[in-house]
Image (tube, rainbow, N blue to C red; front, side):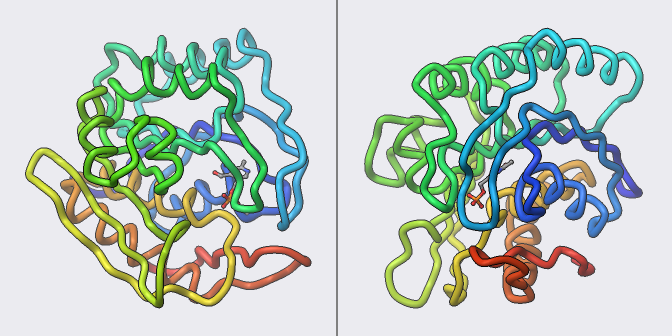
Length: 257
Ligand code: PLP
């Protein structure tokens, strides 16, 4: 499968341009994929941190999702910031039975530190969305919070027991020394990846990685190749990042994967 597959991106809007649906659309363009974008919430934020979430009313979200799914046939769905349990429940309900590859970035906190998900949303992610997920892309903190486990292998096993088919566990949020360790867990086993730790703090790195995974999966790649190419793309985007504001660096996604 190749060409320009259509991907449905479901996530938040980040006006600073680093994360969220803008990261998704820029990544899709770099991978020559088509993007549909469905807003879960607006946000009040700058390149330093998120100050507030403004979820779309769940009924309005449902109406737009139903219209889209009656109209187009995406090859994959990528889910980012949900912001609201009612919106998450609508999404899980509509994705049930569709048999689409789902890439889920469980955004629970901003890089700047602000929490982005409460207990009800975490439960909905775990109970309703994990069973529909092809690849979950948590950082260490998100994996612990979703699984209730502490050790990385146990976190991944628990998340896969909850129903997702693969976990790309990223380590930049808790890296030690000069290297970042990411681990892919999937039906075929466990694959370790190591990358140089880049010097800055970045806004939208997780969105970029998960979106690149979605593009690769939509283009027919198996999880190990998809995860490797997506990480390479993200490393390059971070290596070329710029700092247009006073906060974190923003990835440069205008590149050929
Ligand atoms: N805002 C939106 C809309 C997001 O989707 C995300 C992360 O996915 C963030 C903010 C936080 O981004 P970061 O953790 O890279 O700071």
